[in-house]
Length: 144
Image (tube, rainbow, N blue to C red; front, top):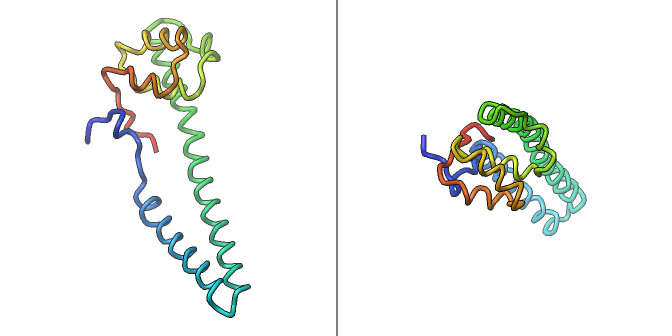
């Protein structure tokens, strides 16, 4: 498996991103084309609207379910790491962080984790700034 870093940490699910969506887009484009070029405009307009709806629903549901669960898991992992490394509970300061900051902190190695938490609290670093500050990247290879 390739070592994960700032440039390659985004993942794709090939059947979804490179099969389902392209096929749906081809159907959508052709139905819009037929809606404007044939005599059966009403049926093709209906098919176009249905495909747009399917596209939106598929995208929203896939993202929503997976990311909601993963966000909870990442926060639990961060709480555990913080407790192991500091002996304190992260919940006492967790409210001071945005989700973006917390999710960026997961990439920090154990040696950088506590110092990046302190730095983020004092400097209010954004998620991207946290990621750029990480020297020893700890990959998250299970994120969808």
